[in-house]
Length: 325
Image (cartoon, rainbow, N blue to C red; front, side, top):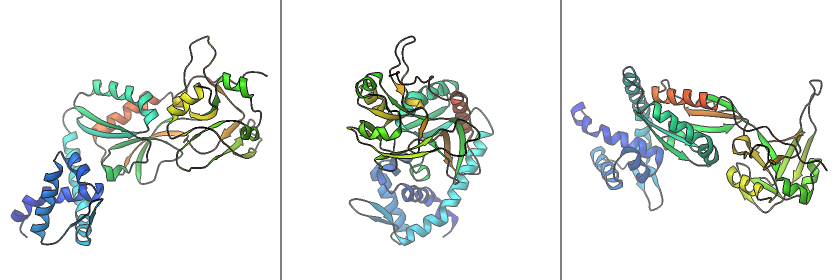
């Protein structure tokens, strides 16, 4: 096929690579600014031009045939290089601009990321942000996101990662609950308490505690596993925070979701078992992540720099201990 014959098909070939990533005509059309019907028609026209079936359609899913997979495998690197080269050339002149698609956890996004985004857009009026808040794990490359904000122990090696700040999680309860049910002095006592569980990752119904090391001479802390029960499990830390404030039990909160009380008043939540650390659940660092690429768009660089500045001091007020017996 000559270049003259191929040129009209370039846009449709790119559409095929997006469809391969999304597995959805609806999402492909949204990302490319088309109607679903137009996207489907263009794929059909591409198949007629190629003389082979490229996409396998069913009522529930969209998949590529072997010919479609081979075609995308050969083309994807070329389209990625074209995109990177175009972005690099555009970034050489003028102010940063363009669309940045960002995903972040709901609680962190609502409480801390949203104000940062507002300030950022006032500073960079030629940049547009599409922010999706979700607590599910998002595949950035397949779903077309430029950046993810995540709390994790360590970022994946396949991504470019910028550390925004450290974070920590704390076992907490309301003073009213502790006055009613008593203050646990050892993790094993939690088996007799109402505990609120964060449903993130592993669906475990137990907590593993490690005693905090207070002196450098200590090599490792004592470990204790506790089976917990309670009336509420949730995959959102804001929901758990509100349940703790209502006095429903003892639960683990990340510092970015901790409530702030009125100065001089009794703290709304207090720390439980301060000498022990719950393992797992929430990560200890907040990162900005993006799929690896040789070039990072200037707009993304500017947003990351803004977030690093905004998050540099971390989260959370000073913590109050449980009331004395």
